[in-house]
Length: 539
Image (tube, rainbow, N blue to C red; front, side, top):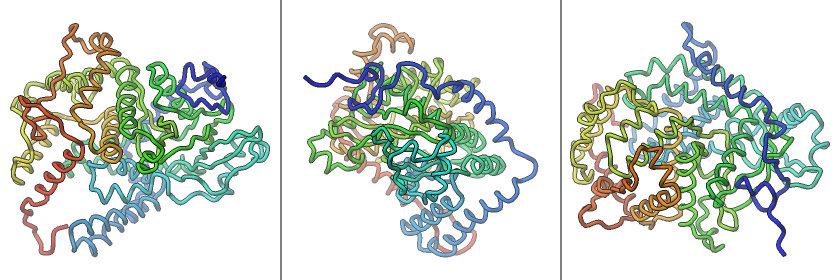
């Protein structure tokens, strides 16, 4: 007879081989977390308030490193242009980010998960910042662990690996074994990270207003608002008790939804502090190890499907989701389930925002542009006073969708400029949950390219919509304000945008989508160069 499942599997998406069992209730380290979250949120305005005077030495250091990197690139590889130029700039920026420390490494990690949004050379170079940053000396690691746990290392651990498994911006992770025999990983915060982050936020807050209106993309993002979002995210990451709570709550959400394709490592019931997090050790295949997974008989298409449904369902139905999906935070277990790691960044939607978010996705699946814009307004992406009808006209959303590959380079460039101008004029911005959601969608898009490039995207979208309709149709109808039976999938605009005649239908694989994206990128790259005031090659 097989061993019974651990008791905590009944309420959490945990492994079946439990090193310990968590109680279904507050953990010992849980006391005061609501107040801590509230206090952190209250600190953001002060942390990101722009002072009259520049923030001294740290500003100079930042300008020296970043300005020096750009200057050396401009004097050298910029003259060659093309991919080699971008690769050189990416390398110099990555090195400068590492030298500047945690905040800039974290920014680099965000860029590294933006495949398709940022140049490939930048994404590839910054990917090393996910887990291959220079580690702290072991003496510093030992000091943090012993200080936070209040006892010597050998009174807690039978073994503790000196070399970290991974080292990133905020912390590094070490393999260890408890005195009681359980194999664990220990996440240890870098000793000076909190002070450095606060100093960097003061620099960013001082610089951000200077960028408004000067860089089109930065203006669209609203640099001061981006600093606020970054501050909100990174300050929460500085308290590992909040991360442990995120682990438990996301795990609880998956279990409540019946999502057993995910496994969340159990945080230790007592060995969690502000700077130290001891958790269950999971092992499996790296998320991009397609050969290894297929060799073990794992269906990589099923892995992708689990990723998409679980991510969407947690956000739409329970208002909580892992906010930082990338290859370093995921592994695939031998049984095909996906292990989720690193919960420092978690998307949480209060009930009104969750309903607006749900309306946004349902409206998108129905090709209802007015409802989509209304939902974006309710999420805070558009001002409360935004004139939606005027915006629809300015964005051209009242016109038939078009296939971008049918446009010339000049027409494509003009279309992008027109859309950016309309969004800037409307006061558009990107709220934190929406930013995290979009970033995760970009990662999932890349995951499909790696794990299931021949997946029929429209067939998969229809299958996912059917799943949600069958599992949550009534709740979705109520929360989205739909009448019974009125959720009708309409993919015509999406089909037209990739060159499929909606009246004929048909599928398209992700590989084919990528080919079309390359065609559009190549066409944009061929647009005529702008006249330069001085001589010299274009970057």
